[in-house]
Length: 144
Image 1 (cartoon, rainbow, N blue to C red):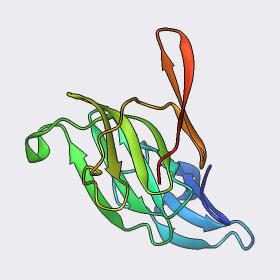
Image 2 (cartoon, rainbow, N blue to C red; image 1 turned 30 degrees about the vertical axis):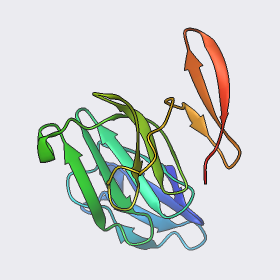
Image 3 (cartoon, helix red, strand yellow; image 1 turned 180 degrees about the vertical axis):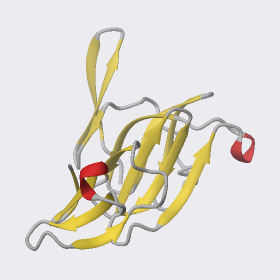
């Protein structure tokens, strides 16, 4: 069980039954939505806005946190590119390291954000991104 949005948890596994990957209301315990098929073994992180960003192996997938709807998927070789290694997600942004260095994707569309990042943050909040480089921890102001 993992947090999946305001008042929502994701419960996955055989103990949940045939629909073993659900987004549940924490108050009632009732299913709000079901995750897309094949996602049971995939780890997802809530971006604290509206999206679950999920990674497994050579794939990055985004799911609407309220409806369980698949928003986009980027797998190795799709669209002529390699998915980034995701390091952090925050308020509609997916941060990671791509083949050419740091990247930021729009969490709702999977598109590259217009500003190329200078670093790959491990943690992000509304104020800073923390970057570990050569065993030194740096903080960078979070952009709008």
